[in-house]
Image 1 (cartoon, rainbow, N blue to C red):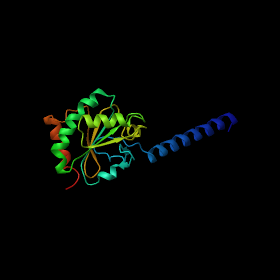
Image 2: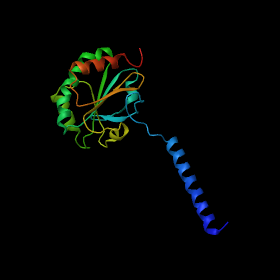
Image 3: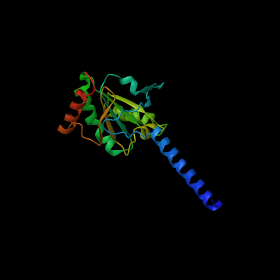
Image 4: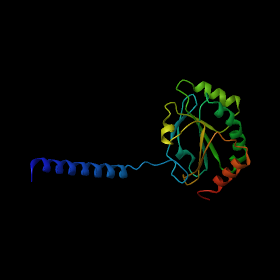
Length: 181
């Protein structure tokens, strides 16, 4: 065999091995797409207390969760919040937990607290100043909401919803029935 030809064969074999290794590596680190049916990732965010406490999805185990990612600078987020409060008032006795995670920058905790007080929000408001929730849940824009069943499966996602509409209420009713007793 000529040296040039054997060199090409060797390079071809190396390239094939590299492609195979890349494929196997990708399969072993499969990207989980956050969509209905997927397991909800375990987030961590802080309360707005004077001594912040870390909360995670585990703190809401056994409950259906409506997870809302928002920011005070986002007009659609601000418009959506009153309907979330009404929804929470109507469904909390049935076990629904609403968790709104603000992605406002660090140092804006007082602004977030003021917004929650002005709007009389009684559900959990958490803060993720580093925006880790954005990549963890593959958030494409705010506000984005994830409806998470008791078994930690995502059953739906929504952008800037009116939570007092019949369609939204029907979706929450299905959440309340999903993933467990």
